[in-house]
Length: 493
Image (cartoon, rainbow, N blue to C red; front, side, top):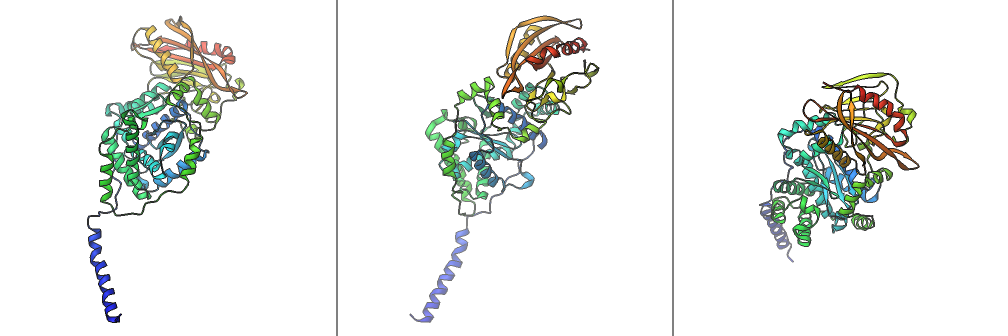
């Protein structure tokens, strides 16, 4: 071939490529940018505290794999990969855990905690689909959807509860106002269709930036809807379809620069197989186990409860008194908590009560308190001491029954012994009743029996003030004289 003709043809090819290049780029926008999440009535610290409290409830009510599990480690590594694409100034302390639940579900809590069911891992066909579910949950946290669900009028109450939450019901109340409901082996969030649409859009951006095809997220949700319909997995009931999910995501992606998406690390098939061998429980089994206190014990025994949760002062476990033990109290002895014969006075609003001067007192914003020996309280719960709180209005008998129901709800397995009896408290007629449950103290690896003494007395506001004296069964009689002396000193002004 003539050299001149060859050069002319080569030049023509080059010119064609140069001329065609702008046409190829036409219609392609800039790389997507994560949106401004906006602001809420609850600041960052409060959201993180609520997330820790909600985590405490999860570890009491659900079986969770320890972080040492290969399945959990894989999910955490995948989560870290997704997290790296979020700007530091808008990121959260994300953490990822795996629930031993067969249902297809995943949920995010305020401030960063995310839980993925074993059933979700086995239902995903590839790493991109699992990444899509996780990116979607991360987006709920990024956009602060739970915090935005809290009514502004309730925000102050939630913050007040966080300032010194002593009893589980104040924690539960704050979480309920956040739209977080526990039950039937799952956590349900009150997400709107607008929330879901935002989580899809933001999740798609996270996936794109991390190298995963955003369409995989829509594929997974669509597949579940086609397979199960509206009565399917919890994932569908807690994440309502915003409508045309797949079409909306494809439309978003079409405007972004083309990208070669990753197929994953290659570990997914192995981890999916391993997840299939994990003992996974049905929602009914999890609900029953929660009522019996099974999962709290199992998670402690398997070392599944994260250290960060055990050390958090805002966890859903009973808040320790100042200077209280932060670690394991399962082997605490009576000698370590033995009360002094010298008493000091505690004053909180209209409440006044005497207590041993070698114990500690901590008040809360609702007029209640926790008085306990430092060695007898940790994030595991209260082994020795007394909790004080305000109960509902109404007749003394009705209020006492409601307090009992609240205690049993927060302490699955607690049993009432007999009917409430009349008691005279410093000249005021009250009610007295005992409960029996399981103590955080253990012997030969098994929890000791615990006795709780509930006393209710009417207050000046038309409700009741209640006191719950707590000790292991075999030490209760030793502490009864101290408890009685405290009760005899009670004054409600």
